[in-house]
Image (cartoon, rainbow, N blue to C red; front, top):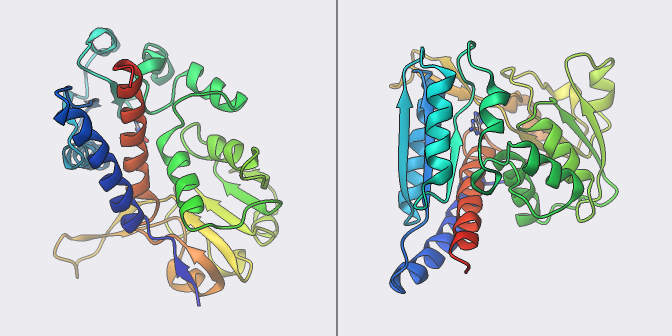
Length: 292
Ligand code: GUN
C-alpha cells in the first residue's frame, strides 16, 4: 500500500507556524510582511496561481498586492514596475508570474529584480548562491519538494533520484538540491533528449516528474516501492464535473500509485508546498529587512 505525501496537510501546518510568527511581530507594532506579484495577460493558470498566492498571503497575515498588465504591455513598463517595487520599503518580496508573453525577454525581466526581494529565487544571484550552498532564496517548487521529503522523513541518503525535466524553475534546481549534503541523493537529470528514459526511471528510488505532459509517467516506468513526486498540474476538459475540468499530473496516478511507497497526489501534493515556500521566503525577506 502506498502512502500519500500530503502537501495540503503539510502546508496547513507550516502556514499555522508562519501565521503565529507574523502575529508576534504585528502585536509588537511592526508592519506585516508584504508580498507583491506582477501578472501579465489573461492566462488562466497564471491567474489561478496569483489568486492562490494572494489568498494564502492573507491567511498568514501578510499584506499583498498584484500589478496587472495587459498581454501587450511593454518590457519597459514591466522594468519600471520592477524598479518601483525594488525601491518600495513596504514591499519585502515580489514575483513576476511566468510565463511572460513571447515579445518579452523573460531573463531580462528577472535580471532586473533586486535579489534581496527575489522571493522566487529566480535571479542569477540567488540561483548562483543556491548552487554554492550559500544563503539565498531557494525557488519555491524545489524548496517545497525538499520540505515535503523532510516532513515525511523520506530516506534520501545514497538513494538514486531521477528527475524528469530540466527547467530553470524546477528540474535543474531540484536536481542540485537533492544531490547536496543533507539529502545526499545520487541524481540523474533526464529531459526531452534523454535516451532510454524508462530504463532510467525504473532505477529511481525517488522519481521527481516535472516535464509538463499530462499522465506521461506510466506504471511500467516506475520501480516497485519508489517515492514519486508529481510536479505537473494540467486542466483537462471533463464534462462530468461541475467546473467542466479536472486536474491531472505528469504521472498516471490510477496505475502508478499502487507501485509506490510514497506518492504526491494531484491536486494537494507539491502545489500547496510551492505556495507555502513562497510565503517562507517572503517571511525570510521581511525578517532581514526588519533586522529580526
Ligand atoms: N510559473 C509557474 N511556476 C511559477 C513560479 O513558481 N513562480 C513564478 N513567478 N511563475 C511561475
